[in-house]
Length: 77
Image (cartoon, rainbow, N blue to C red; front, side, top):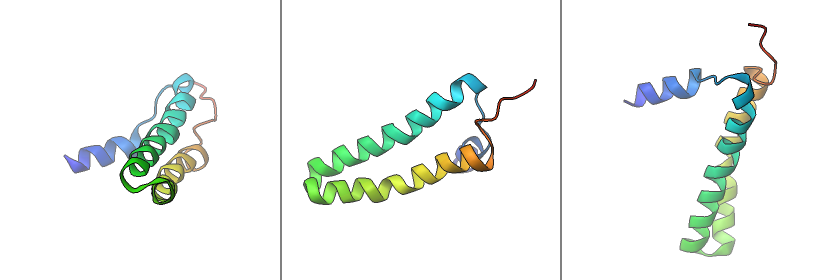
């Protein structure tokens, strides 16, 4: 099951018109959710720190998709 999830994350490529909304959702939903729940649980100072460091892998994933796999290049199909 884990290998299927990793395969999906690695090779998922939506149509061009859905790439930017996908990246926007991937960058905002997990980071805001993580920051919110950690602030509720641990307080504002620790919660923002957890949210900041938890968002680093998400932003790295989005940058990898944009720059290494060239998601913003239009396809000539």
